[in-house]
Length: 176
Image (cartoon, rainbow, N blue to C red):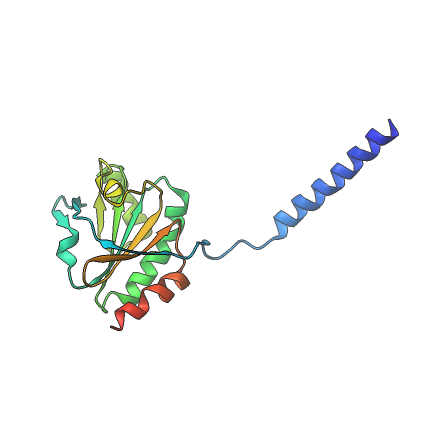
């Protein structure tokens, strides 16, 4: 009995320390991310509709640097990275750069409310049947694809991005 009681006391103390540490640890100001993977393949021919119902295509942005972000309104890391994407876009939209956020399956009303709530200023497209996800052969959300001015996908992020990562990997392309 003494051994069992002692074991329970040790477990209780360790649990209290772990809970205390988790309550006092700082909450990160940005989402964490892995560095993007280096790739080299032609951007897929994606044709979808924007929130106004107009047909849009990646070819509409030939000659500019494009960050395609596949996301959904119900995805917590997607929601967390949207303010970061919006800030980066606003800082660089006059430099031949565009973000195209492609929502994976939500209704137009849900997406429009999300865009209003987050005050997003970049184009948002609807992907009701996951054709964009299928085009990139990646169903992970969020996922982002950096497309150079020549239409080549050159970097891929799986998971949420940070401002620093965007700045490190996209900004040098904007100076070319």
